Image 1: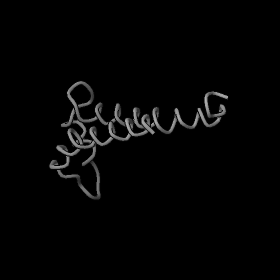
Image 2: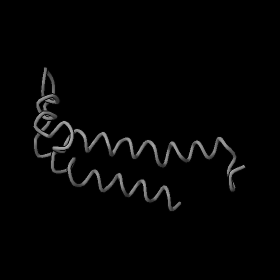
Image 3: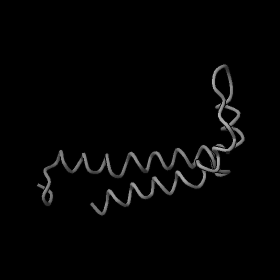
Length: 80
């Protein structure tokens, strides 16, 4: 027992509330910031090939709004 949780509940908490959201945040920031792959290369790769194309207007959402939402998910998982 770790606090109120057994080992499997503790592992589930760590993976679900910390590792997955933090991994998503790192991947997102890598794709759209200059410290990683970069937004231009990301857009070029996403719009390669046939099929639907992604609008560059979504980059504002990816760069600013989505990281805030992921941080809210991480914080709410810790507070809960």
